[in-house]
Image (tube, rainbow, N blue to C red; front, top):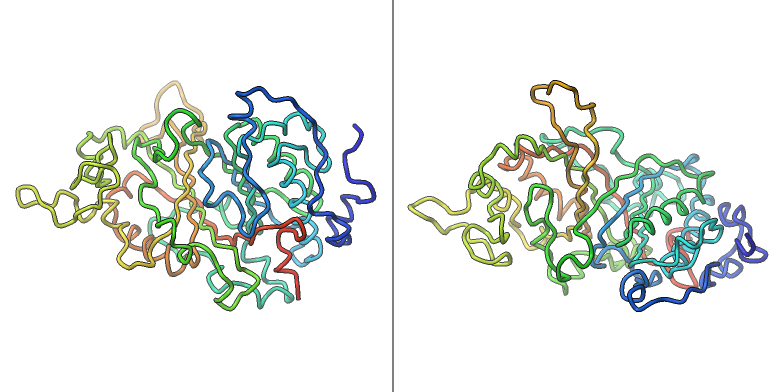
Length: 409
């Protein structure tokens, strides 16, 4: 196939960081196809989310129907030049893919023509900052979360050096983008895990409606106000000017025990959560977004139990707020189903890929999670099995690639 890469620029040079940004042509169009679109394609598959900007897309972007969270590890953690090269390649490839064009070396560019609001978001883990030249640029909060008593963490879902969060309303587009972005850097990175998540299909209901998890609950009702950038985005004033426009991500994989949850009657489920299942309203109110009233009683008994999930998760200080962006997962049972049921064995492997974004996870996320770990009625039916923390890089522009501020002396 002709035109797989820009003239005079080799992928080898990009990965080794020997092509400067001027020679790289960060804003150049990636190779793709010219396609005539029907009105339906323009309304759905043709919708795009801009890649370039001071902040990366995929954080405050309206969540897409499908997402892949890909954890990767550097083959040589000390090779800073190669990491910069990887981020250069991803900048080029993501800019093309999100616009409906192929990546630099796309072998199936036809699969890129319907981006369906594709976004690519890149984060870095703590080990990247152990390199002497980057040690002083490590944010103070970039470290593993404390050990919580409810955690049963599995190494296979643990911390990695690099994170790709890729979202799209079309699973074919998503699979193609994931393949292109991971295959292009396989000489420098190894995939540690892929977590595949889904939400309600786009168009099933009006935009803005809160998703439901596989327990049937609305999930993500409480979000910080849209004008509170101070809760989400770094502005460079915290001693790390390179991070302005970035944020943090906490990624938790939470197993949901469907078999025992389904044994619980409906009132019991609602008391455990603190919300009605049908509308998502707090038990003290009538609409989903009513503020919960933890003092309201019925017959002298609090309508929302103090041990319920929303009571324990409710912020106790203004700064205990963070953006939630959760996805369901539903995979085959981890042990084969036998002709005779195994007592106590789950018949499903379902749960939540729970991503939060906040300026400082130690200050904002950890106090809430600690209360949930200390006691939350929902803990009977949920178990965290994966945990990782990443710094989400500032955005890229047509003149500078992802990570350029990090690698600038």
